[in-house]
Length: 395
Image (cartoon, rainbow, N blue to C red; front, top):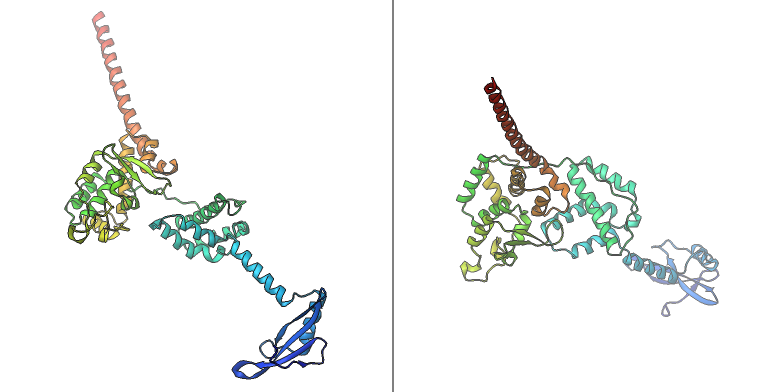
């Protein structure tokens, strides 16, 4: 400021210097001087054109700062810096979601959740902390989404928000929500199944299909009931042929789990070739059913859809998920597998998902009970015949 000449304005404690404004045009820059707590303060009040500053306005600012009604420029900068630092330290929904993702492998399910977050949760709640969330706002989001999306989609969005908040609470980053997030009611107990004829056609198409990876993946889903993502992640090191178990890494239910390796799955895995890149000369892929270049596969939709169409299956039959349902339905309807065991085989986290197969087991139990009833009825009839014969003999 020393190289510019100070000029008085006629207002106490207000002066200006002439500097350059827009396009090099001369412009007055106003300053004020006053004492605060015994210390002389000198600071800029504003520019003539850019801030529409005048000596009178500068004098008014000076008076407010002397009275303590307005912060000094330095105090305002400090307050702004403190607010920015406080904001950076806040565990907002945005920041919690970033942290949540960083602690999980980038799987297809996380990618889908990220799309749900970006499309539905970021705008209304991203800058807020969980403690700032109001139940009414969440209710409004749920109601508005239900006008455009299916109940199942809205349930996924609400569940994601709840999961993010619970993550913050569990990690000690934020307090728990003081209310429960209401979920929309979903009638989603669809149990896809195939008739014996449809299953035979499907197996025939799989056997003749030219892609050996697609063959193995679809048979694996049918033999074990594993999810597509679990099969894609399956590595050779996850197979324990000696003890007869398959380790499922990062299943949908949470922790790693083991499922039995039945004979059909064992034969499939024993005969399945190990992939080597560069026409068999490169390194061996760690994945049992790898994708291009031996890397972890992320989808089989094109191939599985082609197989479904060639087998003449209904268009609403989802090949991979449908085969998981077929596996579960076969076990439940056999009457030989209880629902607790079925839950463990399907790696369901809670029994609620497994209960959709309860009616199949009930039917099998009723059929078994009918067999017992028929046996007793037949035996009772024979007893009646014996008694009748004895009666005739007495005469």
